[in-house]
Every structure is written in C-alpha cells, then in structure tokens.
Amino acid sequence: MTVIDSGPDLSPDLSTLLARATAEASAWDAGTGLPRDVIGEAAKAGLLGLDVPVAYGGGGAGARAVGQATAQLGAVCSSLRALLTVSGMVNAAVHRWGTAAQRQSWLPRLASGDVLAGFAATEPGAGTELAAVATRIEPRDGEVRVSGHKVWVTFGQDADVLLVLGRAPGGLTTVLVPADAPGVRREPVTDALGLRGARLAHIGFDDVRVPADHVIGPPGFGLTHTVGTALDHGRHTVAWGCVGMAEGCLAEAAGHVARRRQGDTPLSGHATVRAALGRAHVRAEGARSLCERAAALRESKDRQAITATIMAKYAAATAAAAVSRDTVQLLGAAGCTTNGRAGRFFRDAKIMQIIEGADEVAELAIGDRVISQYAPHVRDGQR
Image 1 (cartoon, one colour):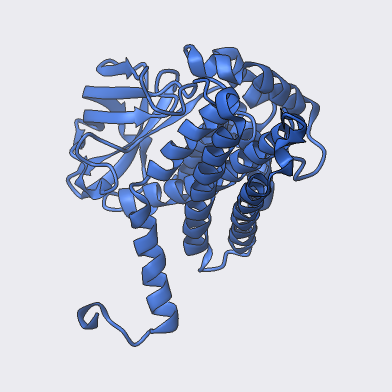
Image 2 (cartoon, rainbow, N blue to C red):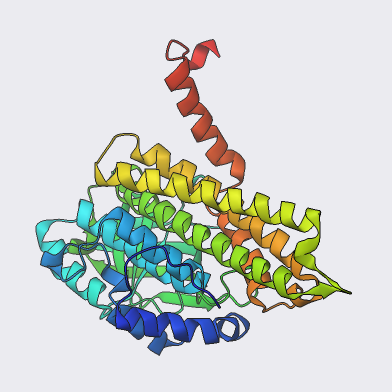
C-alpha cells in the first residue's frame, strides 16, 4: 500500500509500525483487534504522548505535526489511528484540567504507554447529549464511588485507566478509574460496523471505589471543560485520520483504474471514471485544507480554532465516506471483500460520521457560527 507522504521523514520506529500495520490491519479488523504488542510498538514510536509536553516525557508536537502523523496512521489503519486519538484525548484533559500533582503523576506514565488510557463518556441514554449521563460519582469517606454503565469505549478491553464522566453532587465531573478496580466489568464488543480492531468494550461500574485525588477538574466542569477539551482534541485527530483514509483510498483507486482493462481500454480511459477520481481528489484536498487551517489556528491559540476543528472534522469525515464509497465502486468485485482495505475504510468512515451524532449536529454548530459572523444582530429569540 502507498502511504501518503505528507510530512517530514518518519522515525524508524514509526516506519516499522506503519509497515506492520500495512501488512496486518485487515487481520486485526477481522480478528480480535490490535495485539497488545502493537500498542507497545505505538508507545515506543512516541504516538501515545505525541503532543504531551517534553517536561512530562512526551514529544511536545504541535497541532500540525500531530495531524500529519494521524493522517499517516489513518491511511493505513483507522483502529491504530484511534489508539492515538483516545490517548491524546485523555492526555489533553489531564494536562489542561489536572492539578500540578496529577499532571506529574499521570502524564509521564500515559505518554510512555506504561498506562493505557480509555475515555468513557457515552452511555446507552447519553450519546450526542452527554449532559444526560446517569453515571454517579459520589464522594464518600475520603474517596469517590463510581456507579454506572458506559458504552463504545475505544480500547476499553485493554485500558489500564478510564477517564469517566459522571454526575456528582456539585455537577458533572470526571474521574480516572483504574480498570482493574473491584466492581469494573468489561464486555467486549465484537460486532461493530467499523473500528473493529480498536478493542471496543462496554464497561460497567458497580460502586467502584476510587481515591479522591483521581477526580480531574472541579465538579460542574466535567462536561464543559474536561470532556470539552478531550472532545476537541479528538475531533482534531479524527479529522486528520479521515484525510488519511480519503487519500489512501484515492491512491488505491487511481492505481486500480490505471492497471485494470476492459478489453483493450484501461478503466482510466473512461471519462466517467476520471470524473469520479476528480471529485474524490477535490474532496480529499478540501478536507486537508480545512485541517491545515484548523491546525494553524490551534497553534496560534485563536478563538476560532474550536469551530474550525468542527468544520474540519465534518468535512474530512464526509470526504472519507464519499471517497471510500467511490473507491469500492471503482474496484468492483475487488472492492467488495469485507476485510479489503477499501471495504474496511468504507465501514470505518461511516463510524467517523456517526461519532458525536449525526452530521446535522455539526451542521447546526457551523450554522450558528455563520449567523454570528454574518448576522451578529440576530438573537435566538429573533430567528
């Protein structure tokens, strides 16, 4: 497979990991997911702490460097990309909202891969609307007790610690829950549409006792601040990963139509085929441009960065879904195998569109931004 060359030379460890993923990603998707030693290789390559400050043992990478690395992973294996995403989400939340002691205690272990993190927010009754979570986080006798049920936890089968969103007496909050604590139950998910290599799990918490110093951020700030920071980081990496998927599919489609012949005519000789490639190229390039813009705004700490990231994620997920669909169509029978790369990306891209809710959720947020930018005099009550 051709990995899109979109950045500086890769480290030897990352090159080795990408080569292995290229050869084994379909098997991971069809089997039991990423082997634990692959997670170790990702940690060795610096992916689990890519943008954690150097002072805490991370790589100190900026938003664009993180995006470039994520696109490289996305062009090979969405589940491997998801490993970087979920690690980065928890790292970002702890770094932004943890105390100095919490940052010193957790970030070096998370960045090195000594502790693998999971992010547990979604519930059966709280997906897009996370304010509706029912999980309880209750202070008691100098500790906190966690009770509830979380679903679709990426790498939930393997995580050593879980950042859990729940309802405390002072409002929504988050707490780091060791996954081996008594009362934690894991239910592996084996029938997901996409991200089948990402070791998904539903996780129950039955009156789990956790030290009080594992609470991240003050009560009432759990969703708007701690989880908000995590989700913003997640959108950034998902967007770039989708760019990688779209570009990977485009490269595969172009190679196939150049080689494949119908009688004496290569598929690339058909105007409709070239037009399909043209549409795919524009979609991928447009998504990459929005990701580049979002990364630049993030690095400059511009107030528009959050909205720009939402736009990039929306455009990139849409592009990945469209380009992978067209690639499967162009490949014909060769693209219809369940575990072929194009078919795998087709399924994974649909999951990327569903994350955080239907496309209309992002469209509404972007539409609100349009109103505030071009018609700032309009207020909610006047619409």
